Length: 207
Image (tube, rainbow, N blue to C red; front, side):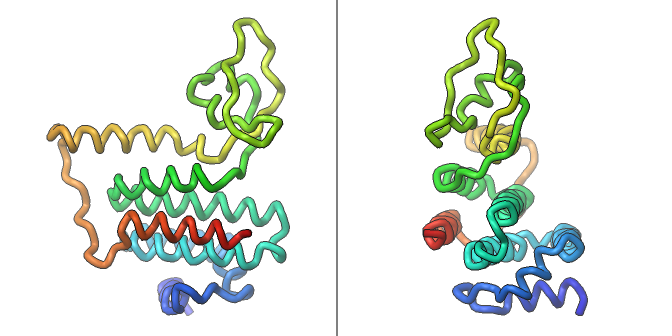
């Protein structure tokens, strides 16, 4: 079975029917994963990529116990980023920003970051730093203060630059100043509201 047939098989299932463990494991395997997303990008099948990302994210919740804490978080981050990437490549800026905010609201997965980044990129980084109480957002580092060695930073911080660019493009478009046209929207594409609802439902299924 080639990679296109595998993707077709994954998407042929009802959306409410999460992938079984073996299909999920094979799909998330590095070799299959890279081939799958190369094919999606080569064919510009971004809506299929979005749907695949949402279904795999749902399956990640279902198979959380088998993945273990580290595998679960790693796959979550990978899939959330993939979903945003598909919306970005499809020029679905409104949907991207709405999904970004939904993910920010409902997730708390972090990646380690060097503490001196708080000194170098404080205003942008500070809202994404996890506090000891589990929340996010720390005050600016006082002048002359020694930063901590490491920080736990919400994974969306690494997508902040792209989000800012998309916000700028959207503002230019609304002001009639955008130079290039967007890609046409697939008539069968999920609406921004439907994507938000799926993301929220998936998160709530985690309990």
